[in-house]
Image (cartoon, rainbow over all chains, first blue to last red):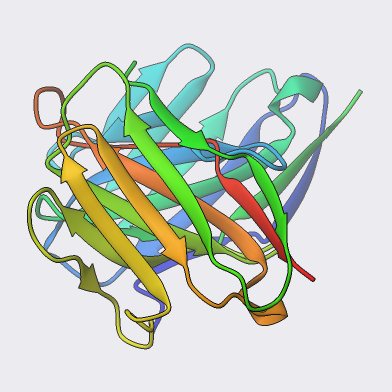
Length: 111
Length: 116
């Protein structure tokens, strides 16, 4: 049972464009939503995170938009660069323990 | 940010042997560490939750006798894959929860295990 659904599976964006990755969840007990970036052969690195009482959070070129009523959240990467090419995972915390991951999105930025 | 060190980064072993993977939190204490398994082009799957000084909690379907977890100190957890077989070949990743900060998990760089 996939508790966090992520789309698309893969995404190709031209350099300078906006990359958008979407996630949806069902469990209303989730209370913290991080995004992770993973390069091949490496562990995930925390990119940005948001709490459900906030509708938007921006850090540099990365923005999370959060819609609590729709139980959806998304990652926007502005001015996408080739170095942003990686796999991105949305995730959700249920309390202080378990972290549930989405299926991942393989992002390719074409130069 | 918090740093989690995982060692080794890559290990090749013969079928039937055991392999130990170490996970250390370098600049914070972690009462809880987590072990994940990741197959190619797939998401991370939680294997077990490791609490310092107590037995690990395994996820459903994970063999606790095959994947031995020890969390002997606040900065070190180990995963031992016992009697490894080719189907155990995978990417294993640990994480540690930083209670002093935002109470989120920081991940190690992962260990690629290849069983011949």
